[in-house]
Image (cartoon, rainbow, N blue to C red; front, side, top):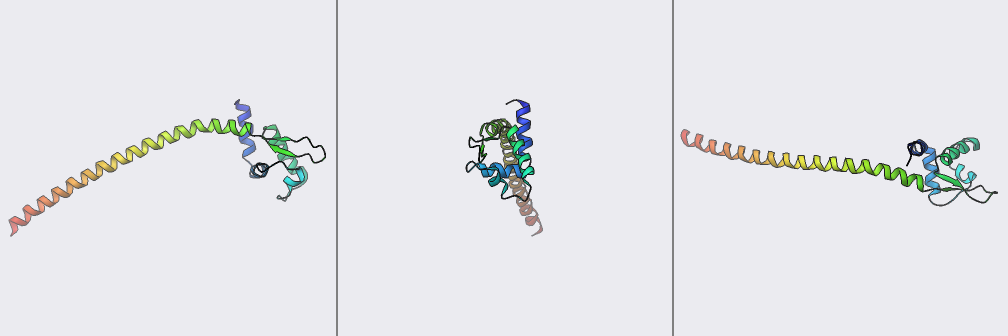
Length: 132
């Protein structure tokens, strides 16, 4: 995915109203009026959100000129997901290494505590034998 397309996708997704519009379109196409219904904003404001989503390629206009339905386009989301996947894999690897290190530290600490406990018990027995 080209950086400009990726930037447009993430910029469009940054707004909660636009994410809500996309969520609605995930269940099927809808007219501008249907998309505007849940929001307390003017028709021009909704239209601006739709234009941002269209420019990012996240939605497209259907063929029915009367209803002017919009529909979700999966390609930009798939490309953004692919881009994010590389970072998810990186961080997953980092967390796995951290988990391994923590397990190693716990194991080392547990061994150290056991040997300290044995050492204290042994010293306590010697001390008790001398005092009695």
